[in-house]
Image 1 (cartoon, helix red, strand yellow):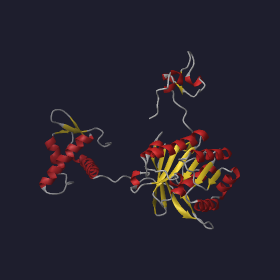
Image 2 (cartoon, helix red, strand yellow):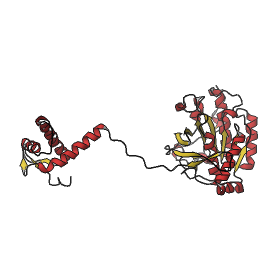
Image 3 (cartoon, helix red, strand yellow):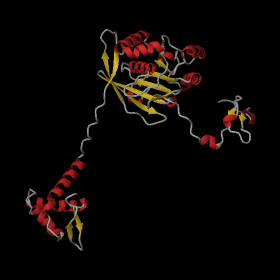
Length: 362
């Protein structure tokens, strides 16, 4: 644990009378916020992808091996670089650096497929020089390589940095160790802090994919968004399993489609169909049928005022109910009770009833 015995009052900045904490120039200590300043809402970071990613945050794209997570990550990178929609979601145009640490040759093939399938977007990306790749792993646990990486970013000034995959950038660090992953997270925070970019990690799930990313839980706790990728045949579904500062957006569906004249595939958005009506439960079906029968029997009620016995007898004698005599009597009694619940019958004096004036509208 860090020794805090030598921290004194001089290490904390206190605003003078009439000044606010933000007016105090940082001196390497800690700024004290007034209650009013602490309660003031912060300006939220702009969306990089509406509802999914914000600038300056940390996210993780997770899926089992072979589920298409690199296709998803590269498709997302290209959409932001080109300023086009990602699926159905609007993006904020920006510069992307894609660290292809696991399969640089495969990333080249996929980029070529995107250029063939989306020539207009590919031309925009090329003209703006807004999509860069690094075909090497970056040891995120080591300070020197991280410093060199940030230095390389001075040329690109990225809005999004993607590490594909996290495992290839651990340089032997134990992903199950909270201490070592804490060092990796510190490096990622440094990259975000010094560049202002959103940082995304492409990572594997554990043996049980439903439990999310493998390794230390410190990683999932640190990210602002966790995005899960699942694959069913050629259909790939992207869903948000964690959004720290907002509600989870609706999942996005894509089809993994081959491209003529290209060595790889691309993702094509799948339009969502209107959801099917929920299946009726047994109780709901029973209630619906009881309501329908009560309304159908209402015309057989006696005119004027009547007793419950007279009403039930009239319903039983209507010929609209079938079954044994006992079954008909029970059905007539249930229908009478339901008519009262539906407002088709109202009380009219002691033990007397009448049809409601708006029975036809009910």
